[in-house]
Length: 461
Image 1 (spheres, rainbow, N blue to C red):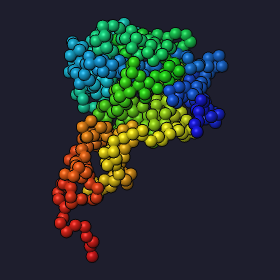
Image 2 (cartoon, rainbow, N blue to C red):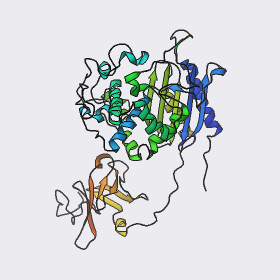
Image 3 (tube, helix red, strand yellow):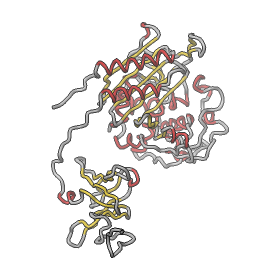
Image 4 (tube, one colour):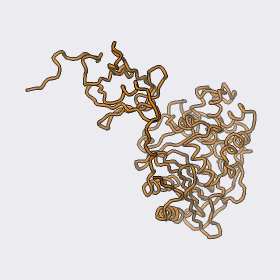
């Protein structure tokens, strides 16, 4: 028996619209539009505006600010995947003469290069890029404020450097490379560096009066790779699906998964707040739910794209006000409302078609000292080691083709699991990074580090 989720239930749709309506009213935003996607497609859109004539749709363009950085990160990882650079390469190797060339590509992607948060001179987000025509104008006389690699420090100029790196390597403008390599293959026809009607006007709302001031929509020039793009709720929902599944024509699933992994040293406050940064993506732990995506802002606009990967819920929120709406909190609430009202249906269980009988000899209970664990074989061909108590180290393992397995997560990531056989060919124990797992606690027949007391197990009395 199957079930279709062609659209959300009426009660869910009403709850989502209510949350957007409250945000628009309390945040005093001229307009807000939101989209929810599941299974790679939009299942709900909703909007509120200060007048019926200006209610936006999923096709209305807004500036998305720093969500642009995620697109720039995708372009950079494409260069890596093509073998044109390594993430550990110093910038100087590919883009000489910047003055910060010792910073690595990975450090720039993760905001760990120690570069300043902003450009010198006038507020770059509200002034034309012609004021900063060269990278030297973007970086200024004091481009670094921290030692590279030591801490997360958000840097807009760092992404201007990555955009210049893309241009240098491809021999074409960042805008042209982005359209050819990402926007067109993903079908993001309403995303670009300049607005195309219908698009929202950016507004500043007076903090103490219900009046508006139009914000300028400056072309950011060299800073474009950090925040230039315009997009729509519909396009960003499709981009969110790509950030989960990947698209071989653009970036593999393995590479987008790499983007979603923490990559920068976190400050204590960030750890406490459940915040980390990957490669062009923000990672948050919010009310017990792991969310990945990016926020963005430019004068007149606020934006958020966030994905609850485990819940298969992606949310986009766009507003045309300089401040007032906490877009991440709104987006996280829309994820929660959808996930709680309509939990993700798990994929149906299916048995494997065939397997190696030798693998079945590995599964079942094992003991590391006295800690009981279970080794399971899943339909995807991976082994998983799990503590039977529910608490402790766990990991999946991929086969290496030589009878050994490599850990994929947590403490055992990169560690090798090796079944060790007795002279008769049967598996005697498992060696996992020098840890010995046996079929019985402290099996005297296996090489248990530290030895086993010859008197064996005993009572006390």
